[in-house]
Image (cartoon, rainbow, N blue to C red; front, side, top):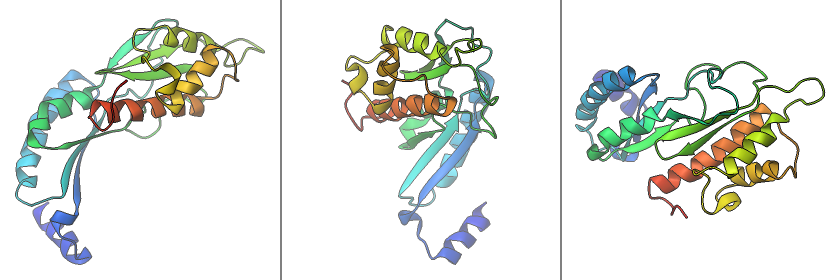
Length: 207
């Protein structure tokens, strides 16, 4: 790694102090993965500390490849192990990165999934699922999900004003817009996730 890095820096005529180093852990699928990853990352941070990087970022993802195991009509918290890892290592003056509300590997579950939302709050994603509706009902289950979400304790005090994604969720809770598609549900959740993580890291205030 040392020789490869020196070659890259030389070939690009870049200096470490002008570069951000990203240490990508990829998937943290279980507590065992988290426990095994921590000492390996600490070892890499010792190596990284030999150069004056502009910043060092730890990236990881903990969202499962599919959330089909989550029961319908029940809000289930899934651990944000990527955030847990950063919490354990932040004394090294590192920055945080994750894969948002999606799986860090190839693909992100089955095509055309049943209505679902993965909603970031504190150290978890609150995961909601509804069964796919029958003929003619399509994705209407998203309305029940959104109604449950806006009534939950983890719905932000500022509600729909917290992010664009929260505005979209509030509209569906009131049935003032169509149910959307899988890519739109991810977009709403990602919008909330980005706003929440920015606030969690002290980049903005959590209202």
